[in-house]
Length: 599
Image 1 (cartoon, one colour):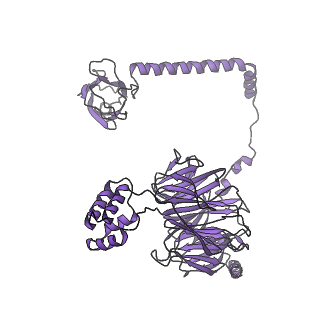
Image 2: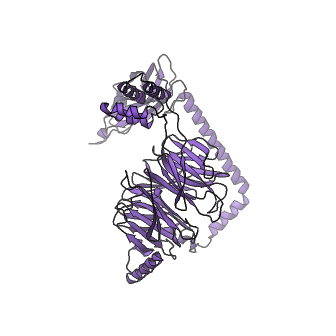
Image 3: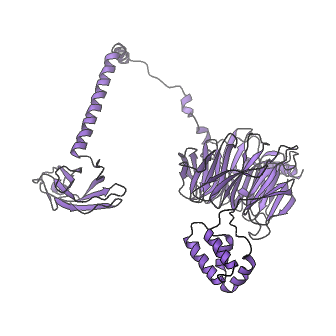
């Protein structure tokens, strides 16, 4: 086989070059084609045994120019064996088993527009169309009037433009195209399309395969599809019916599925609004299971109970399935794509991160274990069984190149960092414990003989501490000495800062209403201080209406009258007009006047 000869050549090259870089020391360069003219992304690549002979092939949905020349290409080893034209731009490729017939040959699903094109034995097998969406009734009425010639083409365009801005339901593609036309082209477009029924269809943004009832590699799977209409569909691969439909707050961009549809499953969805949502069996909405990211995601992978997400702010983040952040790593350049590296023979699971500077980094947990450098940035990568090699990495570069690398069987991905996972090596050293002194023995004997009285004394002191804490808390509530108000009518928050070195200080009082929508009226601010030590230019202030959500600052100039280098507290009270009980109190500890100390 051609790829085996390439592997032998790579082995000989490795022996001749013992000083190979770290990134290439664990990889065998089996094949490199810089002019393969492949333009694709990670979600448009798959590896599968399409003929049931144990020889896995590479399936790539080539984007072509983005407008035409889109093709589904299949590689066997290093040779291209099949090309099939795709009508529209592909958004994802996945392989799945749709029946239990022998031999167990998987089907290939290609998501393109509102359709899923299913290929079996490299031949077109079925085309599934997503269910149509609800059409705006006002839009349908406008097209009916145009069909009956009750309104002209210009009136139809103006009405559709107003409807586009005011309507809750988006317009159909036909209406949007009609709005963009020049006035001279309206009549011809209307004449061709006015008799065609109005339909609103969505497009597929992400696709994945979910096992239905068994976890075997060749078990029947369901298709999980994310759409532009913010919906996630679970489709039966045998009858091509909708088994479940879930709605999200935003458009899904990436999917990560796990579990079994008939038992229990989890679908982690990365959306365009920068959030992660988890969908469970029986749920039509994600509920409160939301993880907010600092920027939009560019890839998502799940390793065990952790979710690895690459973001546009050049960070790689790890979250638990419950939403708790575990760690964050800063990347040296923009992240292009993520891929899972699973080496079952050695129990290794890591994540491949393709960067825009031409590096493909491998992280095991949060530790960098390997770097692969390429001449051009990698836009698509896939790790799995290719040919008859279990651990093969396929790289597709931005310039259209194709590279096939095989992981050495003795690779462990262990570094100094990964060896630190778990207990530190210092725990294996025997401690030099000093000999017991007579004082230690006497103290231990006293504790053994008087353990009851010592425990009672400890409990007694603990109860007294709790009692004093409760008394102080009640006193603070009754005298309003706490800086945050407990009143439901006037939930205020008071803070103060002192600026200056003396003898004149600037005291800034910050007052804030913490309620949701209830303002505070008729408030006063007064101060209590030692008039022989301090002089305030404003000891009494009338406070205007305090609006929720805003912060109000009041400045008071404080002059220290003493030159003895002493200081005291100033109390600031906020209370209602006509009432003597304060709502909230701040006790400000004034600093010593530096002007009185300096000679």
